[in-house]
Amino acid sequence: MKGLIGKKVGMTQIFNDEGNAVGVTVIDISTCEVVGKRTMEKDQYTALVLGLVDAKEKHLTKAQVGSFKKAGAKMKRFLKEFRMDAAELGAFNIGDAMKVDAFFKKGELVDVTGVTKGRGYQGVMKRWNFRGFGQTHGTHEYRRHPGAIGQRKTPGRVYPNKKLPGHYGVEQVTTQNLEVVGLHPEKNLILVKGGVAGSNNGLVVVKPAIKGAMRAAHKAKAGGKK
Image (spheres, rainbow, N blue to C red):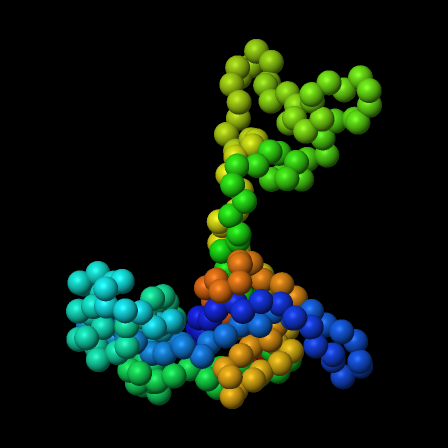
């Protein structure tokens, strides 16, 4: 499974061929490089290790520094493995810079994974989109409350996973089937249609749309049967 790690720059808009304004998210992979490989002989599986954002030695542990030096790679803050076949792995070398046009093309569908913004401790209306109570003169200090949560005498307890107030945000979220509407190879930028999870300068992972691959495989399999 090919993929890239990048940094969410922010959102902007572009005009498509029909002249309509389209909101896009800009993802920067200019600092994404190969920092390691996982081989069948040593690790019992094959994968490519990518690093993003240059790091200083003082900000890393001794084990991390030793790993980078042993591999002869630049020190990076963020690391991510991508499984791939041994034949595909041979096309990459330690220190290779990733290029957007080598992995994706305009019009392709991708899945983008990021970590949502932290919103602290929130009530049920903001966290779970509860409607709340009626806003009448008779409603007293109960407009944003969750309501009753008990089950009478049996079972005499609150069921697990009940939607209640609590910490909201800082969750890994994948937005699927986003269209790549633009590539800028000179700056190593990817423009995807719509928004993705996370704050500006946050880490995101871009992969080909899994549902698109499944549909293509199913279509090929159905065509073979015919």
